[in-house]
Image 1 (spheres, helix red, strand yellow):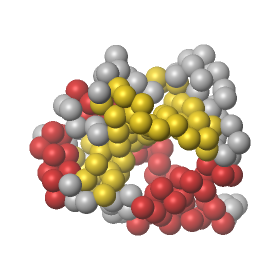
Image 2 (cartoon, one colour; image 1 turned 180 degrees about the vertical axis):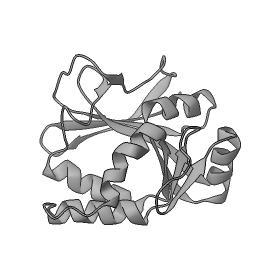
Image 3 (cartoon, helix red, strand yellow; image 1 turned 60 degrees about the horizontal axis):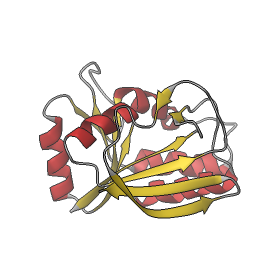
Length: 176
């Protein structure tokens, strides 16, 4: 049975903002390895559209960026959207019955399935489907934006804390 994990980078004041801060070299290498090991990812529309950046080749990319792009392209993706009409390579559009689709993936697959996007994570949390939350806290205060938890958070129990690189702490929680 697969485990559904929601994890994102977050500012000290609780916001996810891919423009305000980026992972340093050590954390980026962690994300490359993490992406390689995933069974797949479930994306909300906005996060999927952001991540589609990795579908295209960019000549200015470093070797690490090319490695991340390759891992992302190889990974199966399920995109939850009622507005998209199609999705890119190695992706499946999920338009209806989110709960049945995700329960089916969890039952059929083995390993870890990443949830990407706070709004999608909120929906899956409300359905009791998220097994673990990973908060990568960066030493930045952005003061506004999309919060990591898009609704009041469920009761959680801390199961791990790790220093990632020089200045990021990963907190790992499970539902209490």
